[in-house]
Length: 112
Length: 118
Image 1 (cartoon, rainbow over the protein chains, first blue to last red):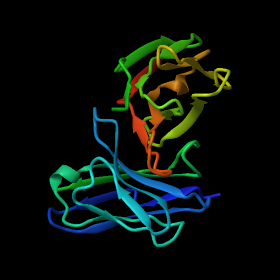
Image 2 (image 1 turned 45 degrees about the vertical axis):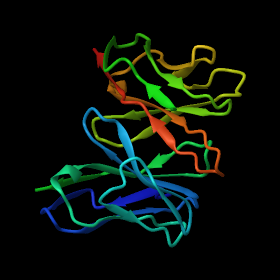
Image 3 (image 1 turned 90 degrees about the vertical axis):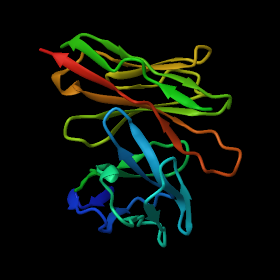
């Protein structure tokens, strides 16, 4: 099984550019989330979804959009990249609230 | 507010010895779940072990066990017989309580960096 597939693995953007980080899972999980990981700050939740058509904001949503048109896909859009968005991004999915999260491999994004 | 605290930024352990990584949590919800993840230098997040608040016994998974002390609100990870490959960041997380439906997010600690010395 592929599990959670996240692309790209690395990306460099110029300030002001937009891009979409892709996330797909083949486990039929309802819950999907996007995190960013910065040194010394652990994992911070950007947006999450509890099913197709349902999304909600996490603790650091500004500058990011998400949509969930299918159970499998949960893309994260950076609207106008800023250097403060330089980070490692993780997509995760899980079956339900009491189960472990499965993570993608991460995307290392640098905004110059 | 619900919170996870990992008080040890870094830990060292000798190969083949046991090590305990601390995690304390704060919640007023009687129903919660606690998770531990490992993040090696390669960057991926690997699930290790889960403990539910109503579980009668401490969780174990191979060399990993959870020292769950509910009254103290602690869920320490114990790694027995440490191996060089255990060198990594370790994160504790808690399933958030929610009054509204099923929107239960995970709350994360800042992690503990473990180095296993040969």
